[in-house]
Amino acid sequence: MNLNDIYTELILEQSRNKRNRRHLDNPDFVELGHNPSCGDEITLEVKVDAQNIVDASYTGVGCAISQASTSIMIDTIKGLDADKAHELAVKFIAMVKGEIDDPDELDELDDAVAFESIKNLPARVKCAVLPWYTLKEMIEKDISTQSFES
Amino acid sequence: MLTKTQIETIRKDFPYLAATSYVYFDNGATTQKPEAVIDSIADYYQHSNGNPHRGAHHFAIAATDAYEGARARVAEFLNAPEAESCVFVRNATEGLNLIAYSWALEHLTEGDEILISIMEHHSNFVTWQYVAEKTGAVLKILRLDEHMQITDEELASKLTPNTKLFSITAASNVVGTMPDVKAMIEKVKRVCGAVCIVDGAQYVPHHAVDVQDIGCDFFVFSGHKMVSAMGIGVLYGKLELLNTMKPFMYGGEMIEYVYEDHATFAPSPQRFEAGTVNVGGAVSLAKAIDYLNAIGMEEIFEYESALTTYAYDKLKALDYVEVYTTDNARRSPVLSFNIKGAHPHDVASILDSYHIAVRSGHHCTQPLHRALGNNFSCRASLAFYNTFEEVDYFVDKLQEVRRLLGLESQ
Image (tube, rainbow over all chains, first blue to last red; front, top):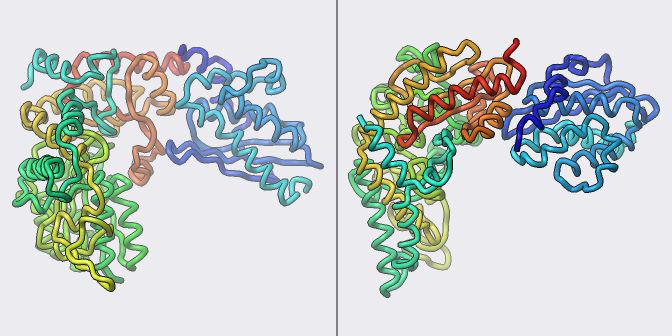
């Protein structure tokens, strides 16, 4: 495949963007995401208010795809409630696995749709899904203890 | 030195290389296989397949001959004093684990010391962490100097009369360092008489081996990194040591007498080869040895060294590339590097789009990468079938990587 479809301006810009790469003051939830086979590692920090994600950020190291995917995910989920963010995580993961045929279904993923063509680059799928799996894990863990309402 | 024409002829022996336009620079992970090796596996299953050592019929005898013939070939390749000191295992990792379970866990106790180096592959690292945890022994680690070498002073400072086990790679899979294992083992034996293990996984594909000259107690390697099939490797051990060790796995073929309440075990190598063995793999390893010997291990090392130095000098000349390979010209054909500002996965993906296969990640050496100040790197590992033209193409495409990642203007 043409790698220009992957390394787009949006992805390159977001991979270097420092806006979302920071620590939050007193985050409500912190979750580590790690791809042990390659060493990519991100720590996702989230602040919530009445189940709504009011702020999110990340720190860590990784490739352009994992970093950009994390940054774009943060832009996408801010302002959403936990259930919706979880739904988008499931949708994103399905998208990069090539399981969604209807492009309209992807609209709500917003800029994260930029990763759709990752499905053609199997070796890099795990880079793109790392932040979304981390988010999903965080929400599932916290929903189970109902602490997301804190 | 091997000529360009000779290399072109060699390349034709490798169906994968002949059929694709790929530049295959991931030989440290596994090499491509020549037709003769691939054919040897089919030939074995077509003409000699049986279960070795079990049965008095033609098939069993043919399989036994094939398997034990391969063992004899391996012994000759390593200059082992006898075939019985060569145990077939799945790979170097299994060989190291066999030593850990059958020797180290039985002999080490609290206060003993295990000595390894920071450049060990995880299989020669995590295994000893486990043994240390189980026995109370202390794991000590030799560090590298700025030339990626282990100095005599470093060895002297970590070696004590309590060192009971010394395990070292003969060639690093990341920095390419080839320590003088023979001299190190001589010192270790003088100071404390520790059991000495050499991890030869990255060494045997590039260099002739003489286990008696090296003076090690154990030597392990994998076949698939030296043009044979996957799933076959060798543990060489001094026979008197092997025959005092407990079995690693229990079951068929490794026994001597079995009673209702106890059993006695066969001597090496059967003692360590429980269950039906990988005869096809062993046959392919013997064929791989024949193949490499026909080219000549010295010729291979000489050519690969020249190719590595050529690539090393080219990479070092690029100000946007950080090179981790040792500057010592006696090194394994491994070029580890990072493009400044780029993650190795992105580099490897983009190189792949130009049909260049390099490794990216931590190469199963996380402690070494941490010591280098990195989480990961790219690795171009060469073999005798690689060419100077391929190196030129690869170096040329690094600039393209920068362009695609938008790093050119930075």
